[in-house]
Image (cartoon, rainbow, N blue to C red; front, side, top):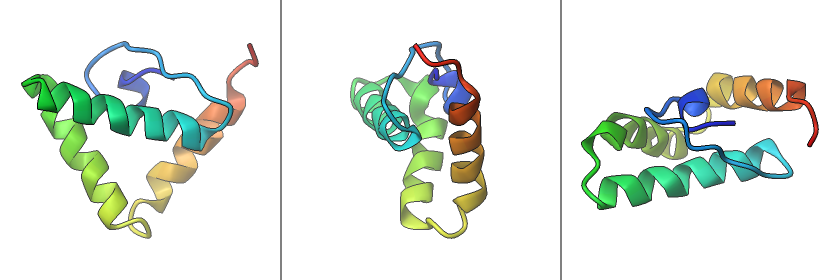
Length: 75
């Protein structure tokens, strides 16, 4: 899945064995880009930060990502 697939602005591909791996990779990517001064990633970072702070409210997003991850071809 790409950063854009997960709500970010770029096409960087994230890989992992599980949806949680991909979500954690996206979180790290967003932190890194914002720390480097990339303002385009700021809104997605803010959204991701909010998901970690309010996991129950973010369950819909999380379940959607898990479902889309499950539909991806293996490889």
